[in-house]
Length: 506
Image (cartoon, rainbow, N blue to C red):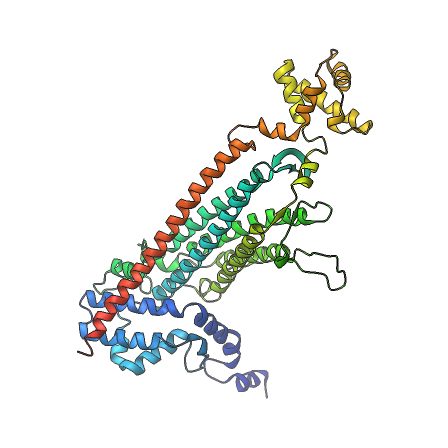
């Protein structure tokens, strides 16, 4: 027996072959069942109602179809299993509706639509809901960051540049910065949501239809903001997937950066913060260990989410501009997994941030080390001694060098050392009193005088905190408005269906 004959004997001589079923149809069916079932029936309802509105279906036909749709829609999708009699979930449900209605009436459901516009609509409905969920947990995390930031507007800590202690700041200032990045991430997710939240229904295969339909009617029933007007674009465009993917990639990449910081802050050597007991794990052999596994897993899952989102770009890249399987059932799970992982990271980090213990004394101690207030010495020379900044910078640098050589901390530097350094740099002495030097070297003073917009001074940080809370309130209000709008559309559609199907029993 030839190799070809062996394969045909094993797989069968007609479509679908067993290998095709196992490698493609079963996985696709399971993905559709788990993600698209509800969206499919939403599209059925909206499209049939529109056909009725336009007089393409009679009221009686519409009522009978929708009655059958509701009966089939209540089945538990979790119990559905792939059946080789049907190519996918869509055809399985079509067969069930045909059993309920008969072939002619069931077939009329599909007037003026295609698997193409229906499929893209299902993807958009599902993705829309997932993005709203991301916005929900993202807003929760921002709220927690603002709450903790508000508690630490005067908790002094070192700011780092190039991984080295640079200047004093506060933990509140740092957390406000993290929240600001997440606010921009929120705006990117919103932008993706608005791109996704457009209806392609009515595009049919790719060139619309000769039937007198109303695309805007379907849009309203489904709660979309608008329609993808050009029918070719409605089917061929994949940028709504790319935009959602890039929003998730940027969100998770940004999360990963401060999550990495948090892992450093948790180390015994750094000892700046302590993750609460519910989110740490004890070693199986070393009982003294408090492993911050919740933060570690968050970093890892964020990277995994980024990888899944990147796969979306890879799969769309260099594909033809039209209806193509690359943007459909093989791609969608990558995006859904990316969003699910992002959701998990956001929720987990919200729990960690909300329960974090901060070692204020340790952070203050670190802020007094490493000569990180030396910038203020240079600034004081410019402000009070009328020295040019570059000269002041050189003097300050020499002060640090001499202090290191003599094993002095910055607050141990004497007025004589300042005189010595200034004499070497510019040939004349600069004089500060011990009291002036003590103030200049104090990280609290360093922070207090940085009142410029966006600076860490407690007053300016408090102003930023108020602004961010107002923005957060506006974002929550906007999120609820869109949730209500979508729910209202669904409720209106259900009520219309209830009224129509009620006529069958009268």
